[in-house]
Length: 117
Image (cartoon, rainbow, N blue to C red; front, side, top):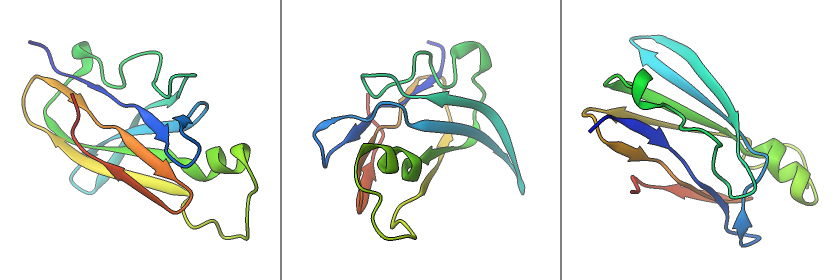
């Protein structure tokens, strides 16, 4: 089985998928943080392509950076600056060739994640 990475972002405050949210994928190499890809979530809160497809999969440490501040500003009242949540980094390791799914459950004042399937 080839390894690959996906995500799904749900806006739990509004009860809908988070459409139009920018996500950046970084590979962490020692002190270096290398941008690999920038994607936008679709109407289902997913990306149109795998974040890290099998052809590009390498074991290592990665980071997904979710640009939630801009998404939240576009979905309702912006509120008082500075916004409580703006950028959500999730750093994780990929150790073996399998499907890694990193969902984000989001609200204006909190979030959660886990390794999904």
